Length: 348
Image 1: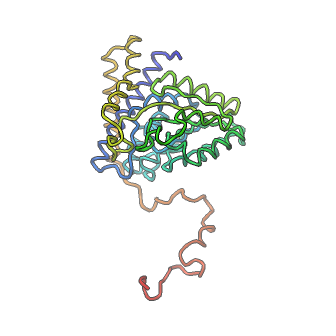
Image 2: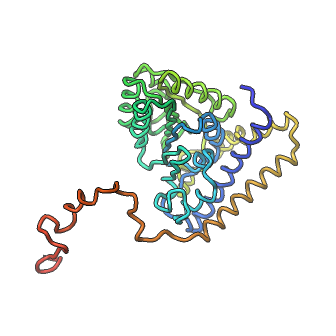
């Protein structure tokens, strides 16, 4: 697929931003300034940026918990993403979600989901809603290779095929589900072939080849929008870090294996293409420096941002007007009590 030098340069900037963001996230997490879990996508930038680039503004995106890169590629400001990792009020989920649950519905990003394969039924429901509302959009649902062995995968693909829903299931095959290789976990290692069980179109490509990712995702999302054709797209890629920041990734991978994959770093591949197109090394170095500065500024912004008010913690949990429905569930409510009292103390 032919991509203009200007477009490729802009996508390269996004990839640099994601790589710098993940490096800073690891540093801040190890400094105990980011809580919870933190899963990095360093090495998967071409798959992330290329697939997201294929989406139209009104399309829906929903992902698993390795989601920093997807939020940034969808246009969420790095300040809002970093503030969310810090649990601050200015975060894209107002500090309630953290690293695994980024969200920006205004940009069509319906969140990162922490339960493995938990996003698939939601993606299927989003696609059904588009059909019922007679909208010409599609849903791109990202998942990891480990999620294809969950029950929700089979249920979601079956319904998507039966109802002809406009959804593309994007399998990020980074070769490991946590610390278990695809070969050990899956009887069929060409994961996209599983779509055949549901009469669904599928494709498997090199996820580190940016133009190929854009071409394949554009093709499948167009079919979803225009013909309500669901599909599976498997992107074969690799993560340079472990499953999470707490995982060195060396107990189940050798340093030689990681070094071999580093030779196919998607950033270096795009950089080489830009050099061949006439972009100077100085210009490319300047883009990398700019990405680094944007991320450092985002870290400082997040550090200075206020923590959310405790009183706002449950805001948005229930629909307006639902207070009466939940009133009967409060402690002591069946007995008309305002306060639950234990006779003889809690220990009896």
